[in-house]
Image (spheres, helix red, strand yellow):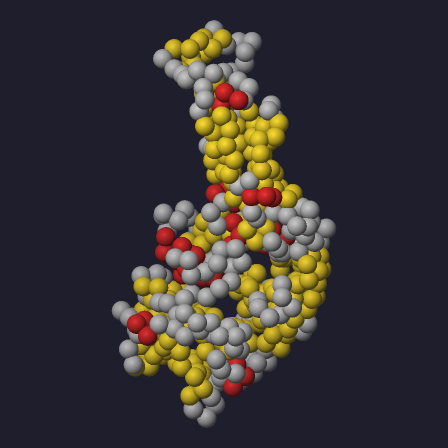
Length: 408
């Protein structure tokens, strides 16, 4: 999903899945409409909503504190390869109400920011403090939603604590030195069986599992993670699932050996189960960033062709993997940026293709149309627009004031 940041034809903006799930009045929106709730994902399958990221992660991407090529990395500071828990929630200072939205296992912990004024504290069953951590980054002004809580205009928080999840009996929220809320663990830990992963012909993976909880009335939520390095590091693939199954779409999965981890949570206690599978080589992505579609060039004008390409297995692909060609001229060169002169190309319309190949031999293409004229001010003939065409048999183009006027 995060592979596609900056490639306009593959970005979809909208509401974070957890927020959408808890407030059905929200709908998919453009980022300039609902900036505080925006996220993005690969738009080839809009059922991938469970993988959309939050505004907090969008900020980290924009500021260079999260790597868009892998979706990994940490929001600033030193990252420790230490097992612990990731805690997220929201607090509204106006109403003094709070909500705990996620407690998940993590194998990377990081010091937070004391300037946030927000801490998360973990307690053992005997009341002793297991650990305390500052919030990684509070998100002032954003809404925080959760079942059983109404935190509409509060502050989102997240923290990682290097504690043993099995020893945590209570979590406390500390703001400016005072504990404003606390959540106690349920009596029983959920149980989840080893998941089953089935690779479909299209490269997607169906994951199913069985999970139970002995506590009456508990509604389990499930999060699915994937690892490409044998389980050393995991990234989320689907978040907050209510049913014990999901489909991980091929566009979000790298090819090769995957470890799939399912975390079933009752809100604070969770159980973890893993399985392994092998997925086919993923198709790379390529997008042409210049020239613009249907742009016009004339005389000896310089034409610069630019493209960006990346791949789930290989990361960002360098220019040696990008081949350019015109349907009328043939080969235009190799590279993420190549140049040509308009007077070296045939007059008329050209469909220019950028073709990229990854290390596994998978290919992807992107195209753009340009118009070449020998002298400035010559417009192309009418072309099909919005489902209708200016037929040469019915309309004769007549150049007037640098525009084409159809006339019978």
